[in-house]
Image 1 (cartoon, rainbow, N blue to C red):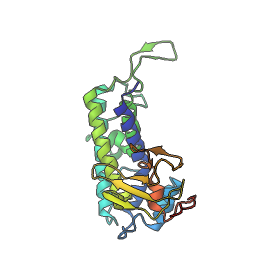
Image 2: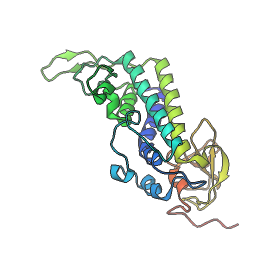
Image 3: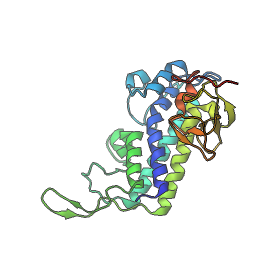
Image 4: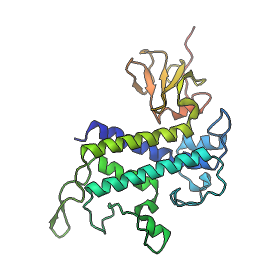
Length: 266
């Protein structure tokens, strides 16, 4: 059974993939004071759309390979470059330690090759973008494909990957936590530090919602009603209904919850 740290790391990698489109959209959109993400981006965040045209992104090339002559949001571009570089370097590190897959195995991570004839070939697996890198790292963290395999002709071959050492699992957890936090600072900057009450009522009971976060953690939204709240979500250590990252995004980005209950009487 995978280590609990592996599950948390895999969840962070999925969050990075899910919010990557929002970060790319932010690169092309000027942030407004106290009103980020902008109106045109909020619909994308709520629907989870992956329409590349709507994102106004030239292509799927990694940010480190793409030209940005005049980005509208330098903080978003810096965050994107940071996340991409960190995840790509992490994939390199894990591949060097545990990868045994052959050159024709689609699961294999390919390193950069400065001597390749074109930029895309020189980038190796990085040319496939952040999503593929996250999928690769997640599989290594969860120790997938670490058992011998039977080929179609009946030949038993060695496992394409070894199990991940504990020190590299810890490194993957550190990197993915930092990347998740950088994305959160762009997508929901007002929610990153401190504690404040949201204008959005609780979708379960109509009570007050509080957003809480620390510099080292993504934001969390908590219902102040307490144990009596029946919202369809988990509870925090004090028994209150709580929405972690990224489930809290719809509550952070809308002035009113779509299915809010009737507010409690004073």
